[in-house]
Image (cartoon, rainbow, N blue to C red; front, top):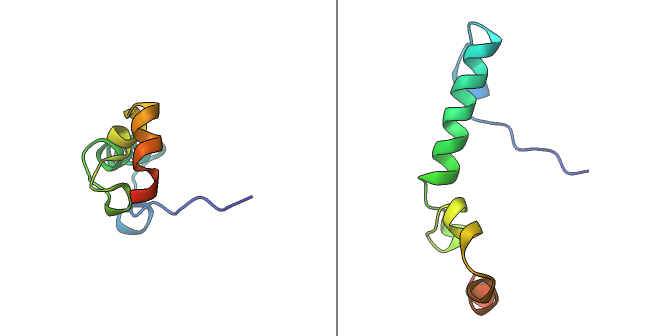
Length: 64
């Protein structure tokens, strides 16, 4: 089973408690998936990439 990537927050922050850690990690996850373009996805965010049509996925597969 592949290992999950370690979130940068786990190295950058000293969390005061579990609810704070969960909130900050969730904020990072939303930003990472919804707002940050990824070069490996052709400049799309993961959310944009995931919501493309099936036809678009097939046509652009070779380009990625």
